[in-house]
Image (tube, rainbow, N blue to C red; front, side, top):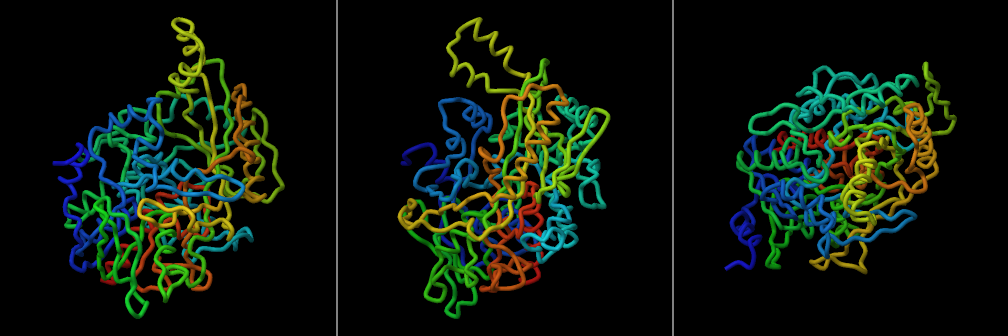
Length: 556
């Protein structure tokens, strides 16, 4: 007899965790990259096994949504993050709150992502050539262009061809864009008076129903929970992979990868089961798709006599060049309702300052002065921010009854805010390492995130705040808060820890995303990004995964 309802679910769904006989492909991780690769290859007739460290989340998503908004529950509890299993440490001049963003389970971090999906700009692939900084990618936009289109179709992206700064495309988005919110219309007027262009945001959420999947119904709790299922999660492609014959094992964290006697191929993934035993899954091809932090950690944990510094790490660069996007924001209040609580996701933004962040703008309402500094890309967003949570206001205040009600009426729904993402250049000292002084629930060293900001990033954050403040002033808002260089935080986009390149001494994977050191180990991940840009990375991750799936299909 099981000890809890959770055990009953676990036994019913995943009782058999014995390894399959040697399969064509073993995929580690069931986030967007792993799910897309598994689905594409299973549909092509290949024998695929997926190993997922976390659980398969079942049950009513509305209950999870209610848990997310109740103060009695911590943020990590919504998707069962935390504890020894997810322990980490952090070093550098910035603390990195790793567990605030990731999810271990079928679907990965797409279970609670925002769902914004933009293509990188052509300039992002050529930062050394264009700007004299960092390095160029060994592939360019045209290499990913058809895979971007395929990824948009797979994720069910709603969007419009109204962004004058976007890279070229031949086909429309699969679904029509969401209409701008009322608050977006207020920002649009202020931006137009300053000469700043606004445009729609492509979203991986359904603006129209698609098959059995519902269109967005406006719950407004997109992060951390979409109760309707309109927002894409990788669960969709995991289910399709299973329908095509793939086998998915949950709660089987991979402990290490083992190579063959020659040290030229990965022979097996060794995973732990809930009863404490270890099993070996052998495969002809091995795909590591467990995120920018855990991918690097797994390779570092997979030490051997042949590879004493970790698997695929002859360059010494596994874990190096960790990057994230930094948040810049300015907010305040208007003397009128902004109705931002009607929408839970972004519908408008501006890429005006992406490729030329120092550009001056002027219009009938005034101007934004130029900046002469060396800056990185800036993506500006018009946040759907209605103000502090009414629950938070009620719990933290001293008022009761009618007085509290009046305060809530006055303070909620009149706020406006702008956010932005600022790109971070790759630096060797920003990295993922193993902390041997602290271990997880299986006795493995936990990951350490070494994270600091450079002066160029700080200058770009200041520039973003300058632009944001000027737009809010033009809007007539009273500025109440600023998030800039001194109090910025990450967007939780883990990039750069297994960078791609043509030189094995300067990179971890080839332009096809196969490791230089092992001929059957593939890494479709943002960890392979050479530079970060300032666009949300998931669409590029999906495009890279589909490209890897094509390469693997040809190999098999």
